Length: 222
Image (cartoon, rainbow, N blue to C red; front, side, top):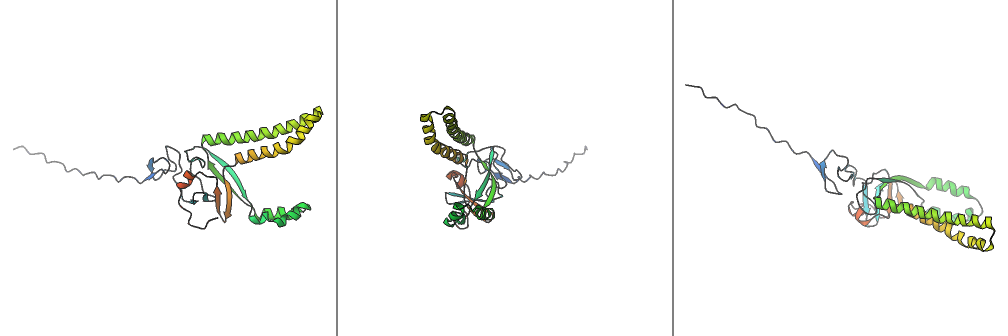
């Protein structure tokens, strides 16, 4: 009788365990837990929330060496570009009225020394959407236009020696130059330092939607 072929015992393949995954907090895209950035929107998946908190709906609290996510701090929209901000903060003691006398009599050296010792600085990279980058650039341009217009008016008044033009320049220059500087500086400012405490910084001027995605600061208010 013909021999029957015995079925060969085949090893059953065990199903592979699914790789660990991480969900992007910005757009919901699922990526492997080894990913550093979201492939869809560029969100930082490594440091998000590790050194970032919110203080209510007004302040952003972060370690001065932390990395902000790839989101616009003004609109909470995805962004692919960050602006480098070099920030300084003077403690309230430097605003004490007692410093007025040294400034008036020209003794600036003690104040300069105090500023060098007490002032704190930090450099951070802040995400901005294309819309807010354009708005920031426009504010800077407007500020320069106002200042240069005042300077041009003064030069024209000196060259032409027209009394009416000189009077107009004397009237407008003290107004236009400070106004142009204020427009440019405020327009270029992205966030404002509210407080330094050790290695942690408090900022405001961030969108409420941006802050809503961060955990609550467990410490004290600024």
